[in-house]
Image 1 (cartoon, rainbow, N blue to C red):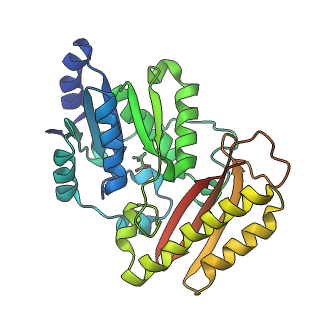
Image 2 (tube, rainbow, N blue to C red):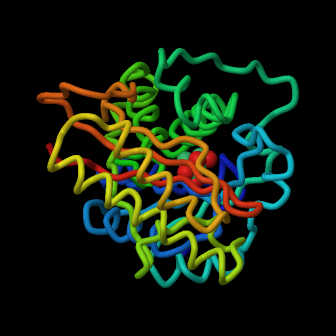
Length: 287
Ligand code: PAF
């Protein structure tokens, strides 16, 4: 596994591989890796010749300085995991390497996609994600890039970004991969590292609530206010978790839906505060 810290070194490594016709895959991360990330790497390795993985805690996507400060940084452990997962190249840039002083900030227009749910709760978050992902795409120029469905809204926005900037993003194929869960159903997340043992147990109720919505929805297909209220009670039953939002939305537009949803692909999205940690999750609904 080769480790690079500069854009130029990474581009130098990739150029001859691209010329040889190798298929290049890319798994961008912020480190604190877990089985969810490794599942992306595994899929990338199966589908392409070269796997590039980046670890960069991107300051521009944190709207809360405390969250940025507390974000787990475990580079040594992460590198060992990536080596074991047979990653070919790891990119570990510094903040200065990715953000030159005085650089002009890019602007994006994602319509409503970045205004709802996470976008409403974390102003500027998706702008920061779009900035760093476009920079990384331009450096790596992968054939395929892999993202987890746990951050489904992020995945939707990145698909839109690539769609809008076909010439700049070289027709990268965006692959969404299913959320990997712990045995309790809790979605794997780097933020889970910050949960106490009791909180981790409690967090399993998020999965229970989403699963309940899924099965109730399958039965009725309408009247979701009632279903949602029941699910909020499941999550908040022990007074440890507080629901920030819990809503059923159209998978493509991310706009909330409440009845008569024939033919739409729907998902239930949740954000929950548990102690000092904010968790998100989502589940596909069957019609
Ligand atoms: O999902 C993440 O870990 C980050 O948002 C990403 C896509 C690596 C951009 O910093």
